[in-house]
Each structure stands twice: as C-alpha cells, then as structure tokens.
Length: 133
Image (cartoon, rainbow, N blue to C red; front, side):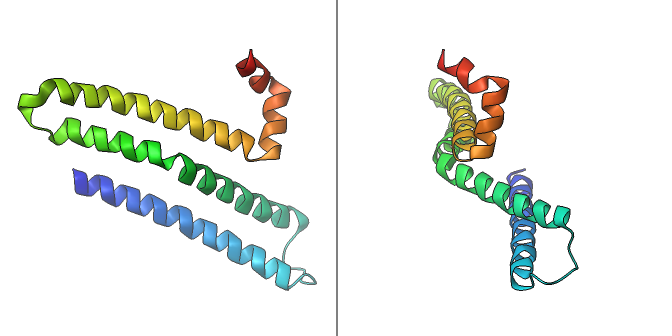
C-alpha cells in the first residue's frame, strides 16, 4: 500500500517535471531560432504560458509544502502509531485535516498573489474583495 502510494507520487512528479522540462526546452528552441517558421504565434504563446504556470505551481508548492509534510507525518502516526495511544492517534488525524486544509488555503493564496494574471481574474469575479470583508 505504501509502496503503491510512493510509486504514484514519484511517477506523478516525474511526469510533471518531464512536461515542464519539455516546455522549457521548446521555449529555449524558440528563443534561439527566432526566425524559424516552425511555430505559430498561438503555439509560442501556449508554450510561454505553460512554462509560466509550471513555475507558478512549483513555486507555490515549494512554499506551502512544509505544511503538507507535517500533515502527512501526523497521518503516518495515525496509521502506524501504537494502538494504546488512541487519543494521540485520533488527535493526529485531526491535525492532518487541519494542516492539509491550511496547505490548500496557503497554496491558493500564493497562487493568486504570485501571479498578476491570476490576481486580475480573481479581482474581476470579486473573490479577493469578498475575502477581505
């Protein structure tokens, strides 16, 4: 069970960084061969946006990752802790829920505030104004 979870995490991260590196490589090729007619304007824009979003996600995840690490540590204690410490095991399950919720909120906050395009869109729909009330 744990091996399956670790494999899934590893494969997901490998795919994420593989696609990121592919997009960075394509962007680098575009910048080196500006006179090349291989790419349309739409493809160039898409590659630039892909790289920007990947950097945003990576930056936000790295900054908010400490909370998720602590959350998963408490979840591990809940799963593998000794049965005679039931109170602490259930307390660690509650801490897991709290820390993962905080991680989600901090990730959303960072994603909105680290990118001006996201800020503009969230301002348009009134999310930021509603959270400040």
